[in-house]
Image (cartoon, rainbow, N blue to C red; front, side, top):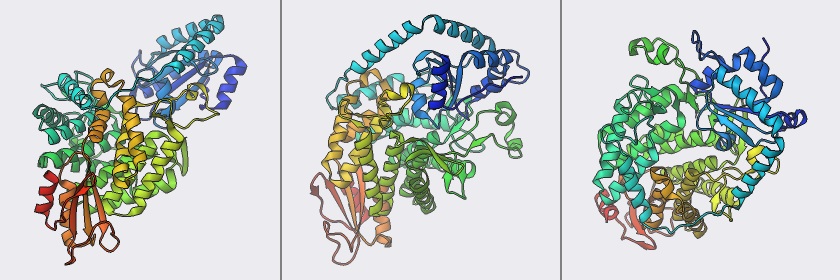
Length: 576
């Protein structure tokens, strides 16, 4: 049987499509995606889902009439962001220049055969019309101006109302099914409750986290959250586990523990840590795998727990993704801050060093080679945020310097003065297809704004706050269209509008007294809080205690409190 001749995304494949004047068939999948595997190879014994790309008629039609390109979503998020048709797998039909003609997700062999015939015929007859329509669409898109908005408390208030409106009071979470965790919405709820005692938002966060962790959404055997639930009650998950999701949810559970001091949230966080270290961790490199597969649902996850202990786990993708691993750095630094977990901090430091030396500025590292988009916004923001987290954990100035350097790359290579937003990737004169179009991801821009606000607080540099203000003003023009998906932007607006609170600790960073002050500073909650460690020997702005004891200052804006030396006094100042 003839094989399907997949090409890689690149100039050679596009040149071949132009030379032969054939449409491009773009398949976007992921190693963890169950239905991607079904589309490739089928389900044994299933006459309908028999393997689309292994069907002889499909293979012959594609090889005859198309240039097929296969792309991994995780490795090329820039391509996925522009061509995804609503899920994975994505099946997109493009012109030879890379403009979309039509798209779908999973297709059976019969469905695919019909589309292959119709689109090939349509393209032959309507080349000129297709080109003209795509040109008009491009002009309309490029002429669209972004409406800016005012930064007021109305934004977090509106998002809070949307969260309450969408909340499932019976089972937690948002909407019906499928249900995703939405950690940023939960973070918003936790912060707003802690700051303003909004009882309804407390219920949203607590019920959702506990329902997810106690049901099928959480692996009660190996630990770790699955990507989403197919049912409203969290009972039947889609079985892939993502490093990104578990890293974000680890921080959410630690935030809940910080706010409520409830051991339930601490226990969930520790079990997520257990999963990450036992299943996803490569101890030789100190890095974490990107995902664990969703296949073998019945053969593995459907078995009793005692049997699973003796079985080989589903496939793990050991590719080191920069942004997702940087999220682990932040999560493990938070384990140190909230729980005094020194081993977690050691892992975070080692991982951060690997990312900065072996992976950045590329998106991923595999087979001893770095690859993927360079200086992608999500990578730069996550790594810079991780550097700040390590700076707050250790007091080492190099981490703050590196955080600034990464943020400056984003401002120079990714920021658009026209839109006052960050592009997802730098401008590339050699870009192909829709990669020539700028993409402004709302969530990544909101995270970038949060990062810039933290940097402004740590450095005193106004350029970071000015850039954050501009980004948030652009996002404020569209937040009403996004409901609770605007939670990160709302968190950033709250941070922008709230007085910035600096907790400055001065003295020997290794003394027992400093350890107590650090613990109090880390574990207390205050909206828009940062912790600054100053070695007493090197501190010039803040006076150390005459008797050699570590001291703490709480500063709001340019006004600082009197120095205090006990945790009780410090906690009292933080609460003011």
